[in-house]
Image (cartoon, rainbow over all chains, first blue to last red; front, top):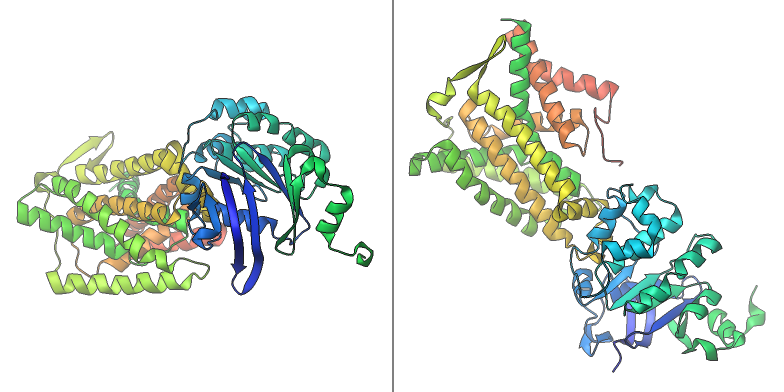
Length: 239
Length: 287
């Protein structure tokens, strides 16, 4: 039995359908990556799992328990935390307050607290009294990851954490992931950078136009397979 | 009458206006809700204290202690079941609903208590005074002012030092992301309005012991509250206290020059601030 899985997950924004029956499964302790072009439905999938978007209850199962229809605070209480796309730090709060607010609704058993998050990202400790939005983009992303870790989630969803950051900064942030894995959480990474995704994840799902077009172990997938799944069937049509 | 005395009386009066305004400021700061029934809720709380005083023979301060949790509960329920439904991108529905609520409260009080003007008697405290250097201050105005300072300090401690306060500010910034932190914005809003009603109860205690009130007294209190909030700048409770003091001093100075000018002088001070500092004296919110 998977830790969490989606079964024929469909998602809508009003009349617009963004997901057309997505099936993914994540085992405990596993790291998976979801890759795909802009508009493929990756963020919608994250918003559905985290409860920001309401879905049919049975389309998302946490250890066979239907959680698709739960609200975001109820999903968090199941031990699923999200690092949202664009970081979404609270500008009125300091760095430390942003981290602390991560424990407001739920605090599970686990290694993460202020001290261990500061040990993971030492620069945050130096800047803990600063307003969160006074930090550089990379540091803000560290706050966003730390904020999600503070609740000691069983499942950590990371939506586009390299977006808008310099490659060297992205490397710094991904360098923290082995230690986050040691903490025991299963991790879902949404990423446009395929190389980065293959490096950090055990398995990869590729999405296109609201569907899963490819899945497999990172080591088993060829560049051509991924290219086809990412951009569509006939690569010569691409402009 | 010396000018110093006039200014001191104005500062103390400003404490009352700050109490009128602090709840309005808190609610606006957290959910951008302008509650047009705020003044009527103050009058409602004053009638509640009056009923407790006359029915149970309580001291007004003891009555306010009983009234505060009742008003908290009323505010919580009002926000959770009614006002939350009006919040959204459009700012018109909350204005219309609270305007209607204002009329409902006024007419409900008129039905229950008649149009007679009432007051809450506080015994010998009403006329007691104390010497402060060269001037004398009434005990009740002094307590009003100190209560206003205590309310601002207390609310600021809550907002900046506690987990609930962090949730208040996070929700004010971004309710959707706050949900990802397990914060339920609907409940945060309800708690904020409940707290505002506790401050309203304190304001009602001093309103009712200082002057007469009747079911239609609310809208004028709302105007003073608005002016104090806007003079001080949106989002800052200390600014709201400063705004109340400026309004109070302007009124007493105006009245010292010519008794007909009391109310006018307050409104003129408000307009002057708007003219030169349209965002108020100590704006905090960046929107």
